[in-house]
Amino acid sequence: MTTFESHNHTLMHACVLHAVGDIRYQQVPKPYPRRGQVLVRVAFCGVCGSDIPRVFAKGTYRFPTIIGHEFSGIVEACGEGVDRISPGQRVVVFPLIWCGKCAPCEQGKYVQCVDYDYLGSRSDGAFAEYVVAPQENVLPVPEQVSLEEAAMTEPAAVALHALRRVRENLLGRSVAVFGAGPIGLMVAQWARAMGAAPIFLFDIVDRKVQMARGLGFDLAFNSRERDALEVIRSVTQRDGVAVSIEGAGVPQTFVQAAACTMRGGIMVILGNPSADVTLPAALISQLMRREVAVLGTWNSDYSAAGNDDDWRAVLNGVARGTIALRPLVTHQVPLRDAPQVLLMMKEGREFFSKVLVYP
Image (tube, rainbow, N blue to C red; front, side):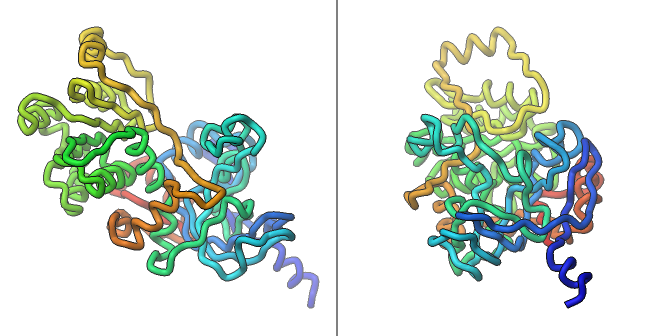
């Protein structure tokens, strides 16, 4: 074997963020699975809404970093001591790497870990040919689920977690979702699977509203054309909705979600905030009088012990057809084109919903 060939075997292609706005498709050393780690050959990696500000505005926790945290792949190799996973398995990876030492970790509440690592923002992620992760974070994908669908497990789990935060039976309860991006559409599908009705969806992009209607949500509206509060009041006999989900992260939808929640209802804050929100005193007064509960939600629940969690529920739901993820995909692009696609998304040059990148 020539030195060039042997050298070639230790390199891979990746999209590396070197500084805010400076993302490059380049060759980097291929990672190696250490003890307890699994090397995954990436099949598909989704672009998260948070990846756009991460690349163009906020940056990652250190540079250089390979971004990407929503992914599926095939196990290439296992480090010493790996006994749960074997090469050749199709898998998804929970991207939050918990410390295992803090009080929340001891209770299995990994999303509340006080000293976590995170693939794609704190350490190297999956905009690459290969990625390593602890075996505890790796979950086999059921036969009935494609690797494209599996790559959307993370956002679908985030959507499910937001509704599970409500901790109430949604059967026959009204739900309004503000923001019909991929996660908003996933939230609506989970709400429908839980028996919620009626389900309202609002967005300011016509194509997103059409996508929602294509998934069977007749009460999907462009909130620039139809006042969300008026629509909800007319359908619910002025009551408002039992559960409102703020999924867009903009001040207007925050105010709308708060305003449309009924007496004793619940508002869930799901969208990453893009700006400060100022609430009118009259609206705060209404929230108080109606005794509306406002809940934060972040990430998703994952069990290292194999118990029921958001991730397993997603994979089962996709396998059974409870939730449809494939219709959300508008773009599949090779890894080398990812920097241009991220720029397109930032500038909004064309319509997109879920964008998948493949090596």
